[in-house]
Image (cartoon, rainbow, N blue to C red; front, top):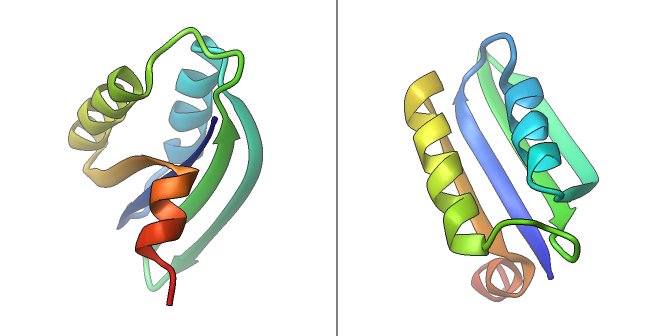
Length: 89
């Protein structure tokens, strides 16, 4: 299963490092990252593969919600299917 992870918030040092470390710790493989900073705001979309993951999707969502609260950004994790369906025009 592939997931889409989105992050939005005020830019600060270490956002990508913290996110990628958590994914690596749980066996989630990053496939693609697209990020930019506009007027001090960080925006990232990351696609990852959970095929070999040692964590369930809901647990990963909870982990990233807690991290987002800790570092002051909004982190959302969704299955790729749900993300695609929600953003279909």
